[in-house]
Image 1 (cartoon, each protein chain N blue to C red):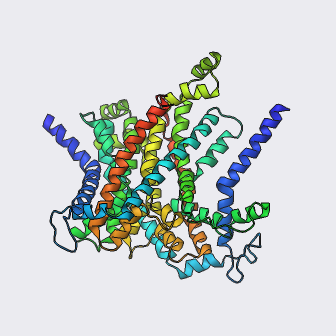
Image 2: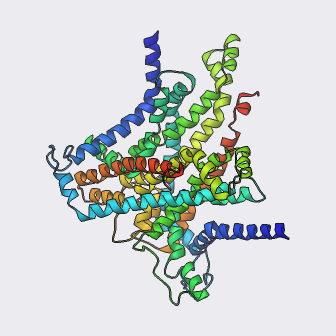
Image 3: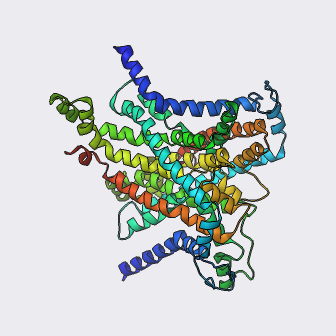
Length: 284
Length: 275
């Protein structure tokens, strides 16, 4: 009877969870194997660390790692930092608050590529932003804002696209704090900043961590924003991986892919721990 | 006086947020999609000098837009149905049977969401090459979409299965209902909103998916996102990109609004028939 039950459960899980594990497991397995020279598509398959050591010596690879981490970390920080005050502001319903919430969350419905197009359309050389600044007389001539070397464009896009997600998670967390707690703190003389630091921050830390980690993983692996709006002299890890694959160099693509997975994993663990420490007030 | 002032500031804040956040970008896109090629829209003019629907009809007739629409809109419903069918047994097990390791199984179901999409795309392609199925592109994309978006399906359907009330099932059984009849009267009413929500969310995800369609599908299969990507890249013509952007974004916004309605109505009292 117990065996039958076990078999039934395994049978039920196989088409769903089973397929998920099979696909993701195979994908990760092939990526790791190919990074060590196995499963070669155009040569001999044998164990080799050559692809790792060659990649480690490449300047472009190091630059990509730094650049992707930069995009991932700052996208996560900006999205969360912008979402926090908005979530607190929208905690209590007021006239128009639903409308503001809907407008702020609308980017969730907009495809990343569409967002990138809308953005470069606004900041292009003869775009509306350039014209507006000239009309105000602040800039005397149009400026080249597209594909800026510091990737501010990519960071703005990532924040535009991800802030609503952070807002969604944080609004839920902030709304679950009862008024009693905040009123008590106010009665005891806590100012706005103290109420945030000592009550709201510790009670919303897990929602904030979740937002940070998910946004970081998405942004560190960014491809489309980088290709369309990013600096032309730098490549993100995804972009580097796709370009290796395009040249048929599967082993190098695998090295970049495995590095990207490790960075996403380790990076999100570090971010989660640091975020918790900051929010719990251990680092001031 | 002060209340009025606060309201006024709030209203101005609201309007400017709205404008910067959504209205300006989308208005620009709509205007660019209406630029007639007979006279270019230069920087010194506030509005395009000649406006027409030429770009829309031109894109419709002379680009791969039609085949991309067909590809996207056959792929997405198929992926939605396949994902639903594959997810149902797992969701039943997770929602109705308690077994050791159930929480772990629920966590593992989320795995596709944390692996970066381009890694999945590239090494799934590599897998297809290894097993000699690399020419089987549409099927491969369909399979990948169905599996990768299953986390949403399993999540939603698990909740739906949890909401099926045991006393309804027992009552049906006591009254002598067969397996099928029990499913129809006890399970189906509670599952219906979850099934619709699953179909809709996988549909939207599949329509929007870029990495798999781009890497696995190139160069034979063109979907709307991959078409938009090439319109933004090697053959960038701004009015055409504007047309494609609007084609991609408008149906999805409508579908998402329906989805939100559905999920809101998916509460246990409504779907089980009593409070």
